[in-house]
Image 1: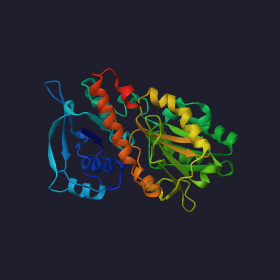
Image 2: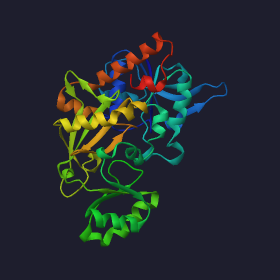
Image 3: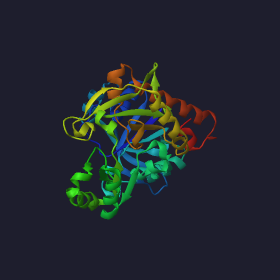
Image 4: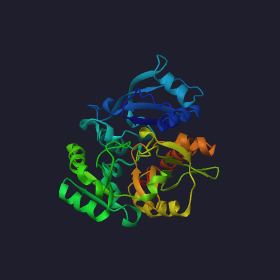
Length: 343
């Protein structure tokens, strides 16, 4: 299998990142893997899609060893043609990129898809999920009550109705710019809204008391909870001190996930839409009986799930990719890219 992966930047320092775990295991299994950044993609005069991409010599890598080699002189860098790939994984996160790069993976992914490459997650589905409004297209019962606006007066009324709310930017990730506001402490609300709205719309959301116990990230693959050897790919994040955020980048601690019927029910309720949008690998962030976020661009944390469950979930992901390639070749492209994404 020839596998390409689109990332934000080539020289990340996150050895444990899901992207590099997938790449290391794919090479270990004998696959050809090329990694490229959004800034290295190119549309050629001969109508082919290319990229300045990098790989490493065949070997048995851990994710850390892979990343060390990937950033060393041993790495192999050259211009490749994306049309020759079997699968292209879009794992660039638009919320942390410059404006010109935010949709680059989607646009070039569409072009590669038209040339017979399996592109995951499906770029047309990703285009619908460019910000947190994507969550609002799912059933109301799975998500917190939410207001999206730039109007201070609307947020003030929402706070008055709810008593306690979360305020955060519509575009963003990693817990950046997230505030907890209580009705009796609303004197800071104007300053908070002014700061958050500098870069766009403001999300005001009902506060879920269960958030005090942290959240659970559950991975879905092909629209259903990802399993390997009977274990589910999931982990808990617990906030520290008075920080309301449980994101790891915000100091959250990791714990083993305790799966329950509510989580499975939430996954089942969002499955039809995720399948319709061609979302192959997704991370659901669950608080209590609600979804706080659906991460479809670069869901991370498979390594954390593997640490607690003692199984290698990346093997299941790669096996699914292998099956999709086999279907594509056997059936002579009778499947659309969206169908292949969740087959």
